[in-house]
Image 1 (spheres, rainbow over the protein chains, first blue to last red):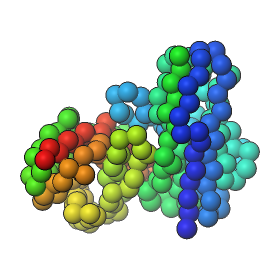
Image 2: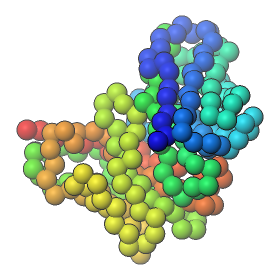
Image 3: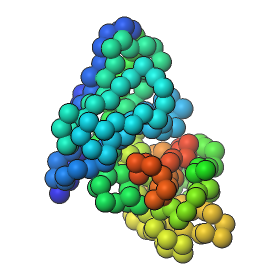
Length: 114
Length: 114
């Protein structure tokens, strides 16, 4: 069966420090991968998605970047964090051929920038 | 364009009360519709789905029917429990959405009191 792992679960970082959040998927090949952010107001904002290795699409301009160095690995990064980067970050996957199928989410990373 | 609108929360109910959370959508093409649930501090879990008009998704006593004529996908449960307290998200995806992304509503917080 397929599983998705995100780490760390929680993170407290000072303003201006770098960030690296990692997400890996097991049990499937060539998944579509997604990074969402959930701010305090509960809404979900799509940040990035990837349909293949090295292919990254950004949904909103921001202080973050994403990379997909391997088929089932998706990394969210920042060179210098801002206070506004605080939030709950969720990684998700879907099978490449399942365009009308649901996304499957990881347990999230709670990021607090101080 | 594609969008999802949910009823405002929070919704507070007594145990065993009937639940309805309204969800309406706009979409180009023929979307698939989903309800996700988020328990405190956790990621999103798929609760139920429907992929075509008049489909009824159901799971754990929750139901939702895909109504094309009213562009709605309301979530219902006949008798809620304290353990149902969570945030509920309505979402859609469509073949026309690049990258197969999900469009979410703002979420509705449900609090069930004993």
